[in-house]
Amino acid sequence: MPSLMECSINNVIKIFHQYSRHEDHPDRLSQSEFKELVQKELPTFLKKENRDEEAIKEILEDLDTSGDKQLSFEEFAMLVAKLTQAAHEEMHKGGHIGDHHQHREGFGKSQGSCQSQGGHSH
Ligand SMILES: [Zn+2]
Ligand SMILES: [Zn+2]
Image (cartoon, rainbow, N blue to C red; front, side):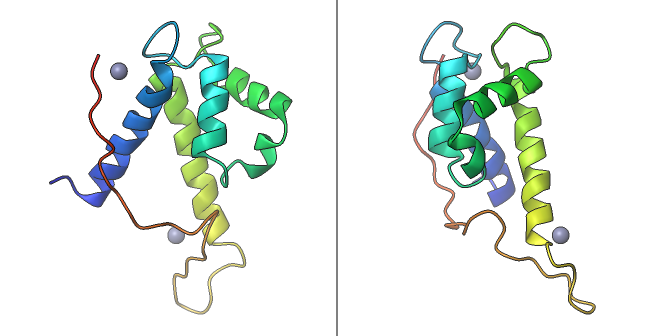
């Protein structure tokens, strides 16, 4: 059994594949696949951006370092890293109370579930 940490990493990969394999290259997110992923999988973390199509397009252009208008997993992983950092910062808003290292709720209540969502094949 993978640990919660390993499970979380696996889930990021699974979710990427869930959307990347719809059209064209099965291991790249097209603009419409990326939009769908952001809307369905990041509704609370990217709440503001989700109301604005142009903002989603800008995120993709930022992440697309190779300039092919698609996101490889490597490019997508940069977004995950940025969001992880932003979520951690959000948890610490208001600073630390006394000597305690306190974490607030962050961007959204975590459901605490890490379940397998079925297989993935190429
Ligand atoms: Zn793959
Ligand atoms: Zn912390």
